[in-house]
Image 1 (cartoon, rainbow, N blue to C red):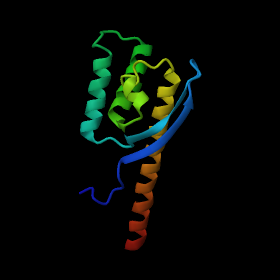
Image 2 (image 1 turned 180 degrees about the vertical axis):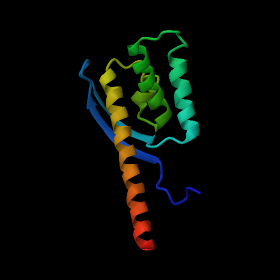
Image 3 (image 1 turned 90 degrees about the horizontal axis):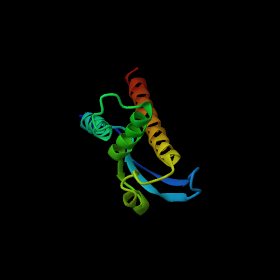
Length: 127
């Protein structure tokens, strides 16, 4: 059914200097730029798990949980420092996590643009 869709797996090279530590984070990430329903479900479960089912989580806790949950679901493969950081939880530079999520969002936008272009080509062939 989805054979004609472009691959949802994409890679990008990260090169970012953390605002707190000044550490340079470099490496290649392979991610799902678009999540399927089961992956969306997994991301939501991870976000819930990270809030520890606290009855009234703070906005800060929700924000960190959302970013970590998304990245843990989207990232297929990352550099050694990503794995060594327990998938981002031991990193001091939260801005790095925001940067990585922004890169995933950019790839999602590109993927969606490819779909729109393909739909336009199909529509023009049918005219």
